[in-house]
Image 1 (cartoon, one colour):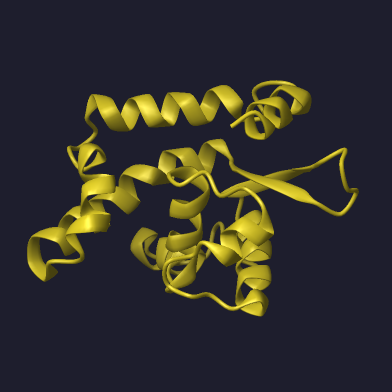
Image 2 (spheres, helix red, strand yellow; image 1 turned 180 degrees about the vertical axis):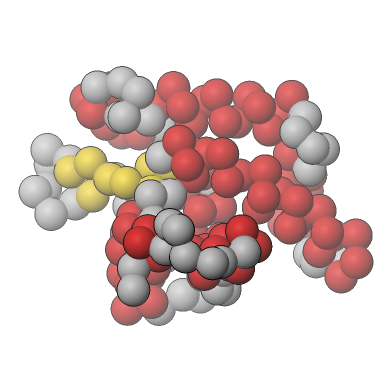
Length: 156
């Protein structure tokens, strides 16, 4: 049964959230799109720090789109090239990712190099996190024209 069809069933909110987004790759892909501005399949694959396979990436992108955390626009340069972005649901999920990062930073001491990149967003929900969310909303084609999204991504 599709996750979006579970409304009305007896399911705990934690269980539902876990079913929707909890596997190794989905939070990492959201991080890469939202924080590291990796918006194409090739950039997500090539620069992924954890080494996702192309098959897993394709499957997880479809899943994230299905549950409404990401979407895409097609580029004019190549009709099959997609530029991914976080939907409003994905943008509102960022504090969850940063809470997870804060917990793992406190208790499990990940790489200082990568921890430094996310450290400004770890205060809950501090001005830096709200600023990032506002920036992502500003380029979201659901809030603006798809052309303004394409221009902002292509000019970056």
